[in-house]
Length: 545
Image (cartoon, rainbow, N blue to C red; front, side, top):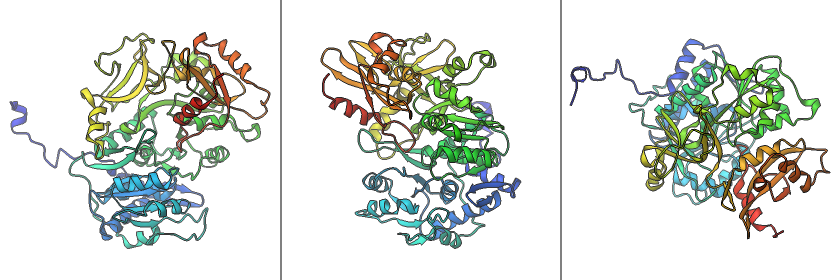
């Protein structure tokens, strides 16, 4: 039954507008037209110029016959065109599909076919992959070459048209489309697909808007931040930061490839204030040769997410003058949606103690309506005792629309009115969550649950360990035992398995100590995550000891 307040007060265009992050760039271009927006090598683009280029892109796509609701893919590193695509593609009413640049042609072919891409923006570095990927597609997409003269000069492309020429076809005053319905899709992001074909995660304008604002709130981002793109823009649309930086009229310092020495140089040269990345990026900064390390004399903030960063990495980065904020999220929730919100009282703690607190995943973002740790079947919350393990469940507007063309997987992921993350955690008395493992990564040895994250943290405490990952190895007696894969820092070649095991025995219960240690380089995804499924296969193949 309608109340008296609903009967005569329906929404109108004056008081109800669909939320979309596309309005952010429109405002910044109007208010700060001459402020810098994009930096890449010797290129400098203002917000007015960037806004014009985005509208040209939208107009040109429409003139080329690409219709609202259709998909435009991008196989690009962190270059200006990738930033522009986050606005130009949806301004035409289309859906942006940013492709993982580390994938092979087979995987990309699947994504282009499944997402029904009508156009693909292609960087010279990946033209061979795209050339192979489009073979056999029933509906061949328009291929647009994006030259990168900073690195490749006048490279030969494979497309029908070059990006700058395409922009010249477009109208800088294009009457762009804002969505009438904020539930309209804005982007398509594919999961890693380690256990089968990757799933297509569909984002809507409302969720992108809210998560972009949440980034600003949780990080207390000021006007005109200088943001260094160490995080791939193809990953969860750069955690929605293209839209966040547009909202604050900041500077996007584009970085084609993660290079720790180059990151240090850019932070100093461009006076970078913010950057994001997986713990492996922070670890690379900590482990630079002493001659290349820098302690910055201006405020620098970093957000990190992915596998829980060991406390030793957080401590090491903060010694460089970089303030670390730990966030957590997944592709299905637009990137980060929880934060280890800081308390002033913790400032008095020793550095190592502060780092251990910062390693927690924390509490929900403002724009995430609900977060709990619960039994995934009964949905009953676990006790807030820091011991009981349950699954992290989420609810809010920044949960995906669902998986493209996969009703069953969507219903399973959103069962019971919650998004089921698959991550196992404990809930502390203060409401902060702390991940103990992925449900598929937990080791069950002799009936005891072993958190691989806990074992990895002990390994990272060893001064010789540069990177570490722990997986289950089959064992006839115990069912499974921990198997550690370790990369040593230069100069520590004398460290052997016995030394690593002895180190862990001092810090862990006996049943948690690795029974096997393998010294090797760790396989990683393009976003810096260690590929544990590869290591699990390797552990299963080890000769029984």
